[in-house]
Image 1 (cartoon, one colour):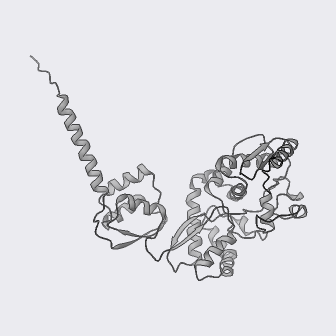
Image 2 (cartoon, one colour):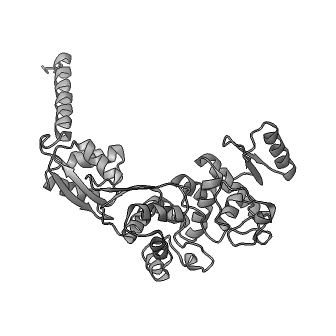
Image 3 (spheres, helix red, strand yellow):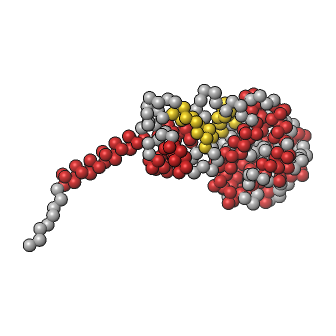
Amino acid sequence: MKLKFKPKPLLFIIVLLLIIFIGIGTFFYLSSPVNKNDNEEIKIVVEKGTSSSKIGDILKEKKIIKSKMLFTIYLKIYKVNFKASTYRFKRSMSLKEVTELLENGYISNDDALKLTFKPGERITKYAKVISDNTDASYDDVIAIMKDKEYITSLINNYWFLTDNILNDSIYYPLEGYLAPDTYYFDKNVSVKDIIKKLLDEMEENLKNYKSVMINDPHYYMTMASIVQLEGTNTENRKQIVGVFKNRMASGYNLGSDVTTYYALQADMKEDLDSSQFATINPYNTRGANMIGKMPIGPICNPSNSSIDASVYPDENNYLFFVADKHGNIYFTKTNAEHDKKVAEIKAKGDWIF
């Protein structure tokens, strides 16, 4: 006679709940501060290319986290990306605070130098941000950014910098290649250290696009810089890139006003006349000599949104677009349709100028 074992549902539920409670309790324990009363700062330098496993080893060794395994799991669940930087951790920090610090690239002390470089701004504005916050003068910063020996050394270290930026007609070789973001530095940081940090960040931003961009990164970064100023979001920027590709393939120039402003180094709020828009300049895509051509180089430092648009544009049949003062962009296929749309926008009082 065989006896059949019948599990008791209540016992099974109790055991299951017990396991769940133990798991939750363990998670909260291991993710809590090592010592919530220990506010001593522990300096750790995370170099570019440091693996998450190595960082976990360092944090565990310094007793900043309780569990390397949970640290690794936390990184994967929340898709945390590190930034190479200098950090000052505390044992009073939770696992969440530790990982947020790593992701933000923040130097946690009161003497940290905070610099914000905005997307869509020219390198001249970046140079002013640096000179306003360091001992270097504006002219010194620009001189470093134009130093061909220095630029050549950077080309040798970053795959996305090519000999194109050494062209004598390029205003600023690093224009378009410095990643916009907010950064934290030590007070005594050098200009070259700042540039390196921005280039390192750009390399990180471009890693998922490298297989597409590798043959001509200068084209993609130039296109990204134009649509940064022409568009307002990833979706319409992708459409604009599609328009620009159609125009070049159809024997038109790009006709982008923002390239004229850069060619003349004019402020975007200035009013330009027809002769200025017709200026012959390797940056000005309104010029008669620019049929089927891109500007000689980037005209601002683009966001990730614009880079994505330049690499993965939308295919469309449009040849024209125009924006109103509210940021709405209208796409048309013919010059007649374009003129009609412009007239409609003006009639509504929504013309941008």
